[in-house]
Image (cartoon, rainbow, N blue to C red; front, side, top):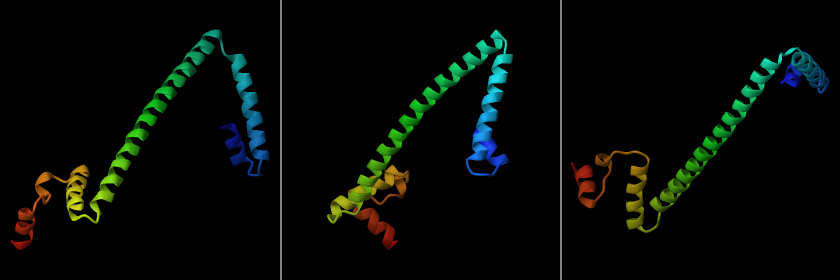
Amino acid sequence: MSSLFGQVLIPIPVIGAVVGNSVGTLLCQLLRDQLTSREKKKLKDYLKQLEILDSQLDQEYQTYIKQINDSLINYYNLLESAFSPDYRVAFDSSIALAKSIGISDDQILKNKQEIDDYFLR
């Protein structure tokens, strides 16, 4: 983070980052020396909590990514079937695809009679 600040304050490639990193390291060492043992313990506990939260968030992230990937695979399979050359497979898959994306059941044409009623009224 201190490298970024250094680069912003000194917009010379690499030099700003090196100066920022050096200043940041120096400030950290100075602050660490000034902390009492109680403050150090609090800081250590806080860092441990952050590690635990980071681990939990990573697990949740992986779960969501897996759910998204599974949903996409299912969606693409339905989409591929909905454009099948076999009209029966395409028709049934179109119904399943419509349901999977949240179209209400009463808005989906599910048989020949419903199709005729819709287009001939």
